[in-house]
Amino acid sequence: MRVLGIETSCDETGVAVYDQNEGLLINKIYSQSLLHSHYGGVVPELAARDHTLRIIPLIVSALRETGLTSSDINGIAYTAGPGLIGSLLVGSAVACALAYAWNIPIIDIHHMEAHLLAPMLNQKNISFDSGFYSNCTDVIKFPFIALLVSGGHTQLVMVKKIGEYKILGESIDDAVGEVFDKIAVLLGLQYPGGAALSVMARNGIKGRYIFPKPMIHKPGLNFSFSGLKTAVSRVILSLKTNDNQVKADIACGFECAAIETLTIKCYRALKQTQIKNLVISGGVSANLVLRSYLSNMLESMQGTLLYPPKLEFCTDNGAMVACAGLIRLKSGLAHTNLSILVKPRWSLESLPKVEI
Ligand code: KG4
Ligand code: ZN
Image (cartoon, rainbow, N blue to C red):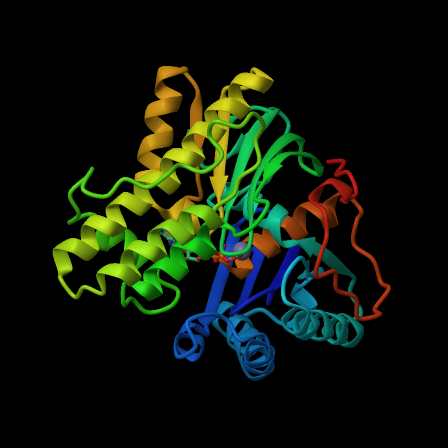
């Protein structure tokens, strides 16, 4: 069984093919970041238009490079939401048109479930009999906690099984990746600057700038990052400095506050649920400081941390959509209703259960 995955929820056009026995056969990505960098953030209309230009050539080259034809594909998985409506519509329209032409079913994929499954993208033969695998050696048993951290979401989710999710907490305002990007722009870095800010922070002196860790003294597992964003922005705008050391010190102070907040909330979620296993995914899970804080925390609790096996699987990609699609196809959740359907807002908790 083979699934073609299409990701167009934001500003990355992703196409991949996932094979039930061989695993990931190809993963192609076109990033629009340069297009949006002039504006310091994603311009939804430009994103949608650019997807229309990129998607078909990417699919054609993915098939050409793997030597596959339409008859080798058993289903088309596409990101149906959440995301930008114009961008989602492009993926949905292409998935429906190809499914009609190739006479195969489609599978609507929840973008955050796809992120959540990305840690197992190295796996060859998908099976969840005893747990959730990132590769041949690391296994996490159900249930586990997932920290989903991207440009659009910050969520703590209890995963009872694939398809059975309980949201324990989420951001009540900005997503953590979004705040990394906004601070990065103020520090003179190109959008999306989360990764570059983290590199800049490595030269910073810890403790020179100390920013508030939002909502850690309030009970509960929700996040709020807009206060931290305002505090850091105020310092940058008042200093108006071009001094690289000062900028690095601010970046370091910001990163510390954001990552420590995420770590404290993860600790709280694990303690509250008595679960010892944590999966992180989404663009910000590429952050090495986050990985190191969390792995130290889990070591002290004798727990396990799992993240996507490659950095390219942390940020948006078609591979995670194809993989989620294969799982849902195998459990009978593909369909042939080819009306173009997207859900810009869509709760993870409302997904149909997966029976494998
Ligand atoms: O998952 P993703 O590709 O897109 C959404 O679904 O939103 O996440 C992109 C986000 C961006 O905000 C980007 O700056 C951030 O992930 N990001 C990072 C790092 N790498 C990517 N943030 C902090 N540190 C990183 N190393
Ligand atoms: Zn994403």
